[in-house]
Each structure stands twice: as structure tokens, then as C-alpha cells.
Length: 376
Image (cartoon, rainbow, N blue to C red):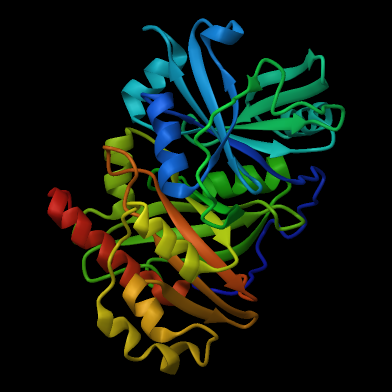
């Protein structure tokens, strides 16, 4: 089956029994949280928010919390050897460990997920300080990624109990990033449908889109993908698996160097992608490059758009259109030593899809990077 529009599938009866208000935070396990925080502040325009470490009584790990509009990143590193955080970094390198989901009732969300077959990561725990209480619980997803349910309606503090406000004179200006649009996972060959079933049956998500190897391929590599979304559409998880090709695909490369399944990229939204990307480039963020010939027939393919084509050409921003409107998107190079996780910058002008018309150009750009690394 190949379709780039909303699809009806065997999970059409799935009910939104687990209302999710949005992404609460993403926690990345990294080798050096202090330096990672400086990088994301300097390059991406995040600001200091909260801190947890030796000074707050945490003896095994240190976390810096940064934010930009509705995006919160928690950057966590071990303070000694032999910790779970250190083992995770040693195996996977820097990467997403926790996708925290903001819910009204973390106990209910946990109990409903467990009833439907989830594996427990964290039983409901109430955490308190002078600013109130937060209830958190959690379940495992693909690889070592976990979903933590966060209930914070009775909390007025900076972030979570156990964290202190991170006071820092260095607060770079924002680059215009607004919220997490979607988060893409790479899973082993043959496991995509398993995780589609997981999100449908355990969390009440529905499949809204499907792409096969005819949609997402070049002369050398291919993959398959299905997009799962919660009821209000605020949480969208595309799930990729490799498909047979003449050479090693980007998903194969990810799985090899991440040493398992995990988060491939985080897509963050902006209201002005031209301004945001120009700012990010000026701050040193590196993006995949697209041949300028892509823009020669752009309006023939997507029709009239508001943006200046030459500005898009200069920055390498891609455009695609669906029945609802159009979108603009661009992808960073990997942001750590291993060729694993990267970011997507996206602006939606009505479109609800994921840029199917750009897949070939994007894949060829990734293949050029793979060839330089000797992993194609």
C-alpha cells in the first residue's frame, strides 16, 4: 500500500482514551551536559531554565534544562562510572532517552497503558517541593526510549521538584523555534508494524499516513514509514524501518552506529523558517545541502508560495504541498559525533503532511553525507 494522505487502517476503532496536552520535555542522555547546554543555547537559541546536580544533592547525574518557547530539553550526563546514564551514553552516544508527555492524570495514563500491554518504566510517583507537586509515571517504547507521563496541574515551580532555577548571565536571543512538531523513530527491519500496533493498542494513537519503499527511495537506498498520532494531533510519531536497497540506507546507518533502535530526528516548528534558518546558519548550525536545480521547477511542482524562491535557494529550504496547503522544511546534519540524531526545522502553512515530494532530494543529500563517511 502506498499513500501520502490520511489512511484508514485496522486500528480505525482506536479511541483517544489517553488525552495528551503536548510534549512536556525531551531528555537527552549526553556525554557532557554542561557543554551540550552551551551548544544548544549558542547554536539554537535556547535559554537556561533549571539545573540538577551535586549542588542540589544529585550524586550520580547532572542535568541542565533549557527552553525556547514551548520546547524544553533536559541534557543529562553521569557524574561517575557504572551508572545507567553512563551505560546508555557508552552504547548509543548522545541521544533521546525520555519523551515526556504532558497529561492531566499521570496515574490514569499509566494504568490504562499497562492494562493494554505496556512495559512499566516508572510507577506513578508524586514529587513535591515548596512549589507544589508533580506526578510522573512511565512506560517503555522502541529501543531504550521511554515515555514519561507528567501531571503538573498542582505545580508552580520552574521545572520539576529536585531542580533549581538555573541562573545564568548568558541568555542568547531566540531563533524563533516554537514547539516540537513531530519526532521520528528508527526501528529494526520488520518491526515497524509491531510499533504501529503498540501505539494504536497501548496508547490509542491512530495511523494518519503511510509511505512505502516506492515513496521513499533513491537509486541506492529505501525505507518504509508510518505516522502515528494521538487524538488531538499534538503528538506525532513517524516510525521508520529500512527496506532492501542496493546500498546501506540512512536507517541502516543509524541502527549500526546507535547500536539499536532510537530517535532519528526531532522536528521543531517555526513561524518564519527563512529568518530562523538564516539565524541558525549564522550561529554555526550545519544543514544538508540540496542541488540548486531543485528550485528551477519548484513553482511548477508546488504552485505559488509566499516566500521568495531565491531566499529558499540560498538557504537550501525545501517546499512541498498537500491538499491542505504547503510546508517548508530543512534538515540539519547530525549534531553529535555519531551519524545518528539530527533536527528538522519546519514551517507549516496549512499542510498536515511530511514532505513526500522532498523525500528523493532529502535522501540524495543524506547519501552524499554517507558517502563522505564511507558508510553508504
